[in-house]
Image (cartoon, rainbow, N blue to C red; front, side, top):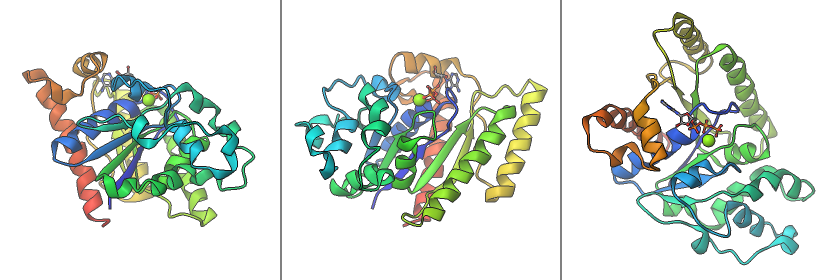
Length: 271
Ligand SMILES: Nc1ncnc2c1ncn2[C@@H]1O[C@H](COP(=O)(O)OP(=O)(O)OP(=O)(O)O)[C@@H](O)[C@H]1O
Ligand SMILES: [Mg+2]
């Protein structure tokens, strides 16, 4: 059975898409079959894959809800799925209307993505399904959480991230309290865009790591990603760091291989 892992942070610009994209290619490089799902109406991940399709994950999810028959469109999984070294289910701006569209249905609104994944046996077809989330804690992210086995939180160490993390852990507790699904495990936090030369930032990062250790136990924070021009360059070329051969990229490749290794280790403990 494949594992579903969401990259989540309600704050924008912390590296969710960057990490999801490169971690997916790192896993594929290790021989795994990987699907990415872009659940962000901004569709940044889909842009990285140069996705082009009339229909997207929004349509596939609505098509899986019987009550919304009048909104169904002729979109099949096979025609929306973009195949490559890493497969993609793209997003589109329609996704920004998701909360409103499903607001009045009787079926559980939090479980639409989970049901869609089950209906299409995606966990049997892939080793890993990586979900890139929008910077909110709205219904789309709740759907991602309810569908996921694990969560990775990229974050920038600053004053606000501790408050944001606490709020996020509370949402996980709320999902546990609902009692309808097993809440996912938050197994990795990745400090990103860190400037260790700035004392305030190192101090904030230490505080955050201590708080995470206290909440979840030790070993759940990855070594920091610094501000790397190579990442900006690769993303603007819509390529993963593994597409570049020169020395500049070997450090970034090692880092993302390290993230993939953490994912593999975690999933071996959860068969
Ligand atoms: N380690 C890094 N070094 C340099 N630039 C980075 C790094 N990580 C991310 N970036 C850049 O920061 C910007 C934000 O990253 P990204 O889009 O991955 O964040 P996000 O959390 O997905 O944002 P959003 O919440 O808007 O979806 C991007 O332009 C990306 O190229
Ligand atoms: Mg993003």
